[in-house]
Image (cartoon, rainbow, N blue to C red; front, side):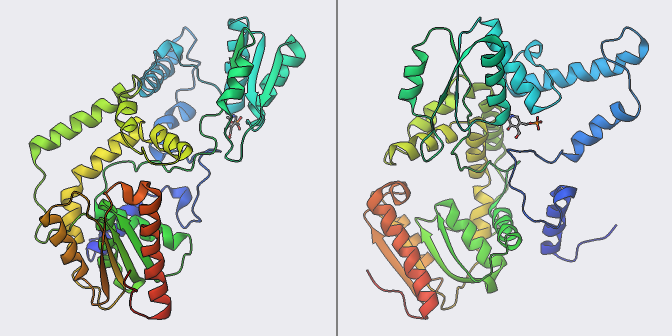
Length: 399
Ligand SMILES: Cc1ncc(COP(=O)(O)O)c(C=O)c1O
């Protein structure tokens, strides 16, 4: 067995193992709405039923036994994933077939008279609606969308005034959020992933890195791993790194967090995540606020949020491996409102990482640096200032 020469090589080979064989070598694939690469573990689990256990699961003879058991197990697994009853899970051969079955089936089962959808729906959905109209005389309404691809709820309310209406409107239109990682990631791992992303997207270095809160730790880890590719840095209310070896994770809190993480998918559908998310993003403009709340109230995002804290101890120690940025421009943009002396001195220490640094004290809170219009404008200005200082080789302007 080949033994990796160093930790960097080990990290790269671990990442290569995780990369889907169809995606090795790039380019980056982002079209997961159209289709996703089949997980090799799924392909492996399905293979015996393509090569060996050929029987029709509905048959009464021995060849049906294994396919029937496998189908029942798969149905139960899918049902558990989406908190449904196995009997309510129907497997179809394609997305188009699923749309047709769900839409036409629901309209006929409810004796519907009016079908509502949106103009930008997938052709398979529009086709199912058109069939209802053409062959069954069902009236159809196609609602317009705004510049973000979203339907106006007032238009939908008006259309629903018609009795026996059914609605099919796409869930993810106009949303630009990425999904959480598959599992817990520490700061060094997140920094390495960012590096891969930039590399695969052919974004040339050097980079000006900007990070807020835990994001500051990830940027420090990035600079520690790839020092030659970093030209400047902005730390926005960054969590402070902690020198020394990472503490072993506390088993008690570990199991607490695993228990909470495990609970989230089970309670998300009754709105527990929604309650947590409602407490946040209060100062964003309504559209962004609603989008952020809807997104962060899902079980995977809440689970990922908790996992980030679980990995926090490793991340603060990894970030401390960056001890010197030389004379590269560094803006430490602190959020001083309600901050204690310890916070102030941690931010002071961050500013000592470079001989060309500026420690800005702002009357902002941790969250308002991102969410408040004026505070986030000042944070963006800090980034602009570092970019300008890099481009002109001038010191950072005191503001
Ligand atoms: C909503 C929707 N319906 C149908 C399809 C088409 O799926 P298939 O090619 O499996 O019929 C897609 C694929 O992108 C889809 O997003």
